[in-house]
Image (tube, rainbow, N blue to C red):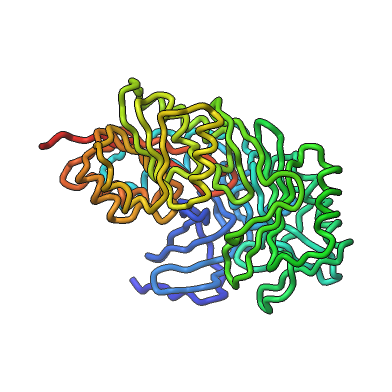
Length: 457
């Protein structure tokens, strides 16, 4: 049979059968794969090929011939343009199914596991209004109006927003009004191509349980005329606003925050309640975006571990102690390891605030600190960044041989890679994997994998 040659710009008909881990629909035909954003498994669609390779192609949805039963009307008027969400056109039950499949496929394809024990995804309590932090790039319209929003899918075109359905609704008035204040102050918006201008991003943060807020402007340098008076004006206008900060990022970079933050008015932190404890959260602190889902996943971890009170627990990549401190209350001793000095300082403060005295925190790279443990821990918590664990961390764990490992992951591809290494030679077995939905309306999924040592030696 002659293989049909696809041409760029050609219209083809395709039925969508799957979703990628970035959220695009996947169709197959003529022994090739075609990736189509804004589609749902079950869609039959006419698509235009925009980028053609020998074994696959990227296409743009041209016409929906028959919609999938999982397709719904998006809840946001710019959902088809804004790159903040990928899946508002997919009903929530199917979003959960797709995320569970994403974890299973990663463990099978990358990890080499057969029928991995992956539970249904821990569903979000609410699929909108959940984000406790939103950071918006700033821009200017053709008429010179200050804009804030997310970039259009596949482009660098800013989609201006006055509210966002996935952020905590208490932040929406600030999003709309702060843009107007920046306009009236005539502060210059940063132009990344020319590396000119001043204000790069607007960051808003809220304690979901306390209602306390922070407002941070990311700037190229500290010279922002009138910022002190404007900061006090914001504090007076918004009773729940605890502080106004500037963060300096003078580099030509895609990173949002720079290394230094200054408080202009109020205090440089908010209070948040988490798992019955009180935490101090700063503008650049890592704290899970969906507070309630993080609490629900913690409950699963606590239930699965069933700690008896005599364990020694190590929390690697501990941040400000979000998992360390609740778990420390259930063990004999806990140690948190974290490379960022500022995070460790906050973790120590949070431990003192909550009168938790059986926990210590160490600053440094996990791969350097972990081998220096004087006592072998019974339980190790891993919560690494998206790139996963350094190979030296995996090797050290295989030498230390803790009885149980809990690997909390924000990228299932690196989770699968690392679990494969940890499970080599049958040293550890996966008892259970619990995915959790921290980001409804997106393709992003997190998961906690529970490993038990096989006691082969």
